[in-house]
Length: 202
Image (cartoon, rainbow, N blue to C red):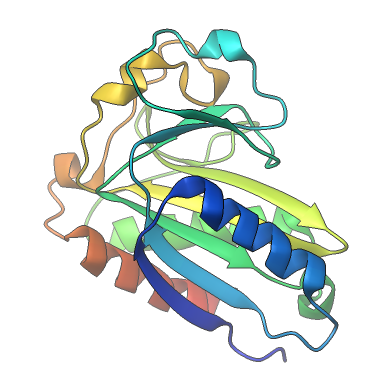
C-alpha cells in the first residue's frame, strides 16, 4: 500500500510558476519520491491544453492565456475555484490514467452528494456535471508513469470569464459552482473536504 501523499496547501499562486514546479518535481522524482497533492487557487488565467485550439477563446477579456502540456482544451482558473494537483506515481499505485480520472470524478461526486447535490460524469467528456452544467474540470499529464495537473472545482467565483471561451472546447457549455447549488462551503472548506475524500479515494 503506497504511503499517503504529502499535502501542500499553497494558497493563491500564479499559474505558470506552479506548472513549472510540477514539471520539475515530476522530472526529478525517483521510485522512492513520496507522492504529493497540492491544494491551491490561481489568479485569473485561461489554460490551453495540448489539444487546445485558439479559436475556442472567443474574446480578449484581459485574462492571460497559457499554453500548457495537460490533456484537453481551454479552461479557466480564478479565485474561488479549488484546484488540486496530483503528483502521483501511478505505477506504484497500480492503476492507470483512466482509473485516476474515475477516482477524481468520484471524489467530487461524493463531496457534492454529501451536501445534497446530485452530480454525474458525462461519457467522453471528463469532468463532473450537475444537470447540463459543468462544476469540475479535469486535465492530466502522465510522464514516466507519474501524473501531474489535476482537477478544478468551481466553488464561489466569478463565472463571467467562462463566457469568453468554449469551456473544454464545447460551444455554449454551461458552467456552475457549488455556491449556486445551495452549498454553503467556502473554497477553503470545500478544499479540505475534497482532500479528505481524495485521501480515501486515491
